[in-house]
Length: 280
Ligand SMILES: NC(=O)c1ccc[n+]([C@@H]2O[C@H](COP(=O)([O-])OP(=O)(O)OC[C@H]3O[C@@H](n4cnc5c(N)ncnc54)[C@H](O)[C@@H]3O)[C@@H](O)[C@H]2O)c1
Image (tube, rainbow, N blue to C red; front, side, top):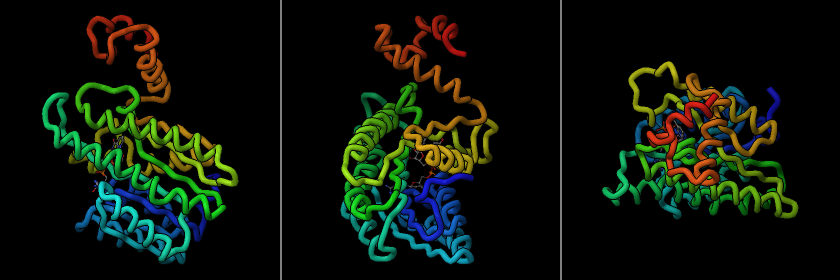
């Protein structure tokens, strides 16, 4: 597979939310490529188990693996992650701001659940960007910052308004970040928005992989292919939603504003027939 130059033997990846799901699959893949990996996640057995598994892949390839237990909602701890990465490896070539959480939220109840979801899903990513970007630019070598969004931040389905709002903000902040990076002289760092489809992870909370879901490793392979092409938007399909389906859903959502429809009109009975005629 053709790879972005940041993904080569001896390069360094820092991944938040690396103890499970997509983050762990990324850590395993990068270690398998011979990259050094720093895994970050909340303290606990999951992080230790993931670190052992990633190290088992890295060691035969001459790569080294470190782990740091942090809460991405705490800026000092994310700054500590940056300091550990540079003290240990002297460079960071791949930063994946991937840690995320989802708890049930309601539009006008549970303010603390809204706050915590924002602290982790949005502030966790902003902390990573603020702590790492200047140092990565200063290296003068090609690197990537991958922020994990969600289709829920683009098409805004009903069900978890706080989660959707955090992911919409991640999309906005990451688009702006990439605009600023490409306008920064001598900058070889690019930002990318990873939008997984339905993926079987800790977040999905299913006992077995649902047929419609992708494995986390499929998301990582899709990401690597997209980064090699230079794509900013990495919008993964899954086993039940194709890229063509996603395209129609995103166009329809944007059409709510252009056509003066109700918000979330895809789920408004008044627009069901029109949407049925529009989708592929
Ligand atoms: N699984 C899906 O279908 C799906 C779809 C779209 C987007 N995503 C996004 O993908 C990303 C990865 O999630 P996943 O699906 O692999 O889930 P996961 O639960 O398997 O992994 C998320 C990891 O983030 C860690 N984490 C949570 N809060 C943290 C904090 N405050 N500080 C540090 N680490 C923390 C968790 O401990 C966990 O190990 C998330 O941002 C999620 O929103 C997932």
